[in-house]
Amino acid sequence: MKKPTWVVDKERVKRAAAHETLWLFGMHAVRDALMNPARVKLRLVVTKNAADRLAEAIAAGGLEPEIVEPRNFDSHVPLEPENVHQGAALEVKPLQWGTLQDLAIAGKGAPLLVLLDRVTDPHNVGAVLRSAEVFGARAVIAPLRHSTPETGALAKTASGALERQPYLRVGNLADTMEELKQMGYVLLGLDGEADITLSEALAEVGQRPLALVMGAEGPGLRERTRDTCDRLVKIPFAGGFGSLNVSNAAAVALYAAATR
Image (tube, rainbow, N blue to C red; front, side, top):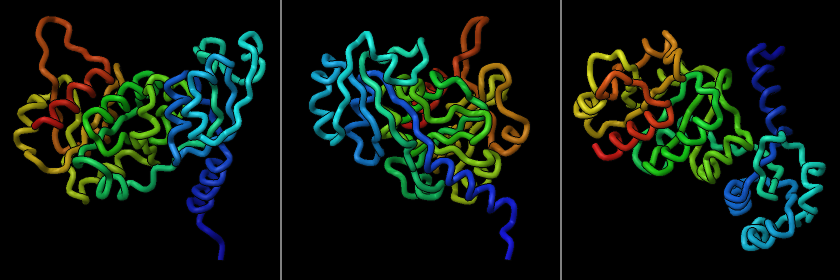
């Protein structure tokens, strides 16, 4: 019996992901990846100084490092010139965080999620991951398309949080939102033009499972994403400038949600 096209496509993506690797760089990102037993580690390139500073993590990671001279580092590792590697780079496979149900229902901490709609800047996503970890969110969720994949730049900005904070990318964000509703989650979409404030909505939500839905600066939430939210809410502002960077908005919203 011939498999449906969507099944074939899903299997192809899964096979490709199994062979995909990426380079992490910078002391924090490399150290935390080496210390993470769930991370598949393939190759470690370090300067002598970086190796000394990472000695404990290298021992824990169980990977023999390649020691190179600082002046020759760039010729051993395929990094972009603007990447500040600090003499340490680690080739790894992407992390596997499990299914949406694994994370939303049985994940660690309170039932709190962050959904990112078309947020493509790795620095913003990395900062959101840090805030999500600090305030105990179970996962950060983004669509496969028009989002930031797991990259070295993302890991460096996340400053280690990528190794501990689940980051799940899904085929269709609106469909995932509907699934979360079936699991009992209330979905609040952040929109500067909304009629009610985040704090007002949180008072209504009480202690029910909560997902905060955020769009990219400029375009904001897509129409279907907006329509799938239970409520649209705003973070109130003073003065004439009322726009927060998405990572800053995430930090404010996560703090408010975690302390409701």
